[in-house]
Length: 294
Image (tube, rainbow, N blue to C red):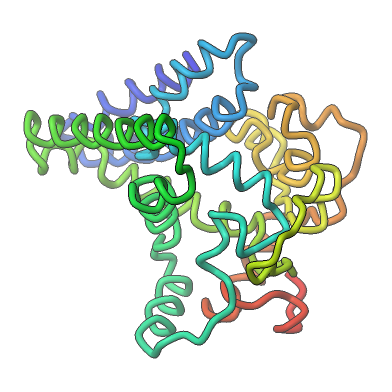
């Protein structure tokens, strides 16, 4: 966490320089660190980054500032994701991709954004899952939970408004705009690779049981990055099958598990195959329906 914070500070300092080359280097470095802040948020949500829960909570809130995801909302929603993996219409992070007829405008937007690397999904993923207070209150009806989630959204939103007011939108954009877009460009396919275009079940409103963690491998895909990047930047977030099977194991220790995931694929091979599909096919169908095994 300290290393990530130091690199983030360096990236912001470089982004204040007049030289566009130095500025661009700072933004590129910021993009990398923002991805790592997302990884840190993920680990703290599972309470696996530190030995004490208190540290996970504190650092999780710090990471939430850099990822634009309220920590308490992340922790609750992501917990439900792990509980309901395999049931597409019960998992709050996959329900939006349940197969349905798409309007002409939806098809056009989906296909254009997917083809031209416009990170629409990462934006909708944040807004729909972690900032939509009305939906959060429906998912978590107890008053204490609703109060905590709403407060988290309000306070983090107020912080961003304060930064924009104090520094000015143009200054904020200069310091972090490109870096944030670069992080979304990476996160978009990474997040979509984990469960999209894989056959998932539909409960259709009936009472179903969650799949035990060790049975969730078939609903999950892992990407294989170079080991230096997987460990040094992602803390093995790309080992997604192992993570779903053993969510209590810290990410940095996942590769020590002596098991070879069945759905692991080279990141570049997966990106080439996935990007060859129309967005509407990739997002709203699975490999059984489309005939494309990616």
